[in-house]
Length: 155
Image 1 (tube, rainbow, N blue to C red):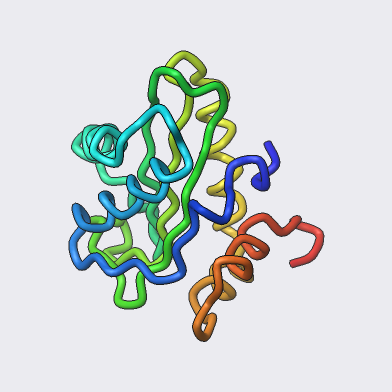
Image 2: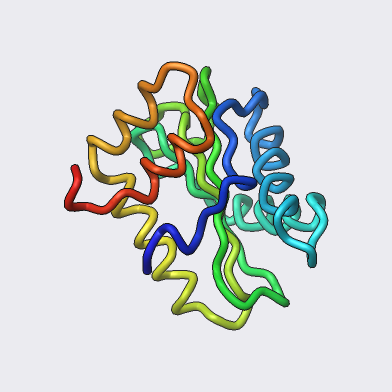
């Protein structure tokens, strides 16, 4: 799955303001819902929170990937946000999450959901990508979109 298919500029925030996991989940839900006509921010928040209650979506290295499935979607969509101070997502390595990617996938398409999660995790597993995302001075939406969707060949 190409990451460029998952992201759009309206769903990217260079500066998340939340200080708790719940604050961040609401901000990410708002980003996704802003570009999605079939769900309110509260509905997306509920989906992300429900999944988070099953176990943390913090994967370590300063990254969290809250995710869930929703009826009515035809393809996975994602939002990217950066937190300057980091938020405790109870990651296995004990580090705060600074890069947060929220993913919503069609309820009935587990394969697409797993492929999207794997693509995101692969991209963020690359140290160069994480470093670029974490070390940007005054990042712009366009710059973040370019980094997260860049091909593996360029890093």
